Length: 125
Image (cartoon, rainbow, N blue to C red; front, side, top):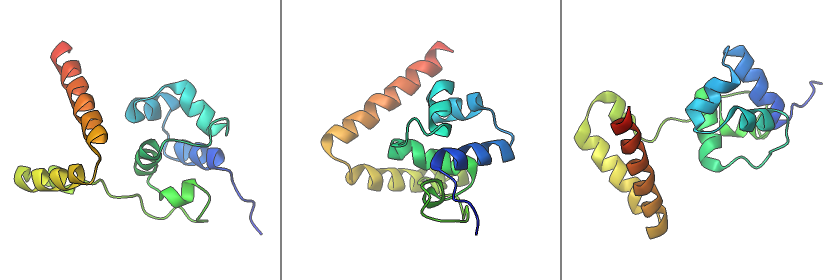
């Protein structure tokens, strides 16, 4: 019988297998190296859902695997905007609009604020 790994152990194991640093994950999750350390050490177990999803995508596994609900890593979740990678702006707009329509007004405002934050970073650099 195999030993069951904690969420943090699974994150660390996959990160090392992929030769990612904690800094790399932090940069791609929009968080800090200290947060990644806390995830891996099981100090923080309630990782925000959006970060958990992105983490699964980066590590190439399912969210269920990270949460200990599956024994095998499985497939990484697809990004919600597959059309963006395909270079189809109209389809991207449709997919994005469909996602926004399922959010509350406050959540949509948060998406807009984050988009404006990203734009401001591009204007500075």
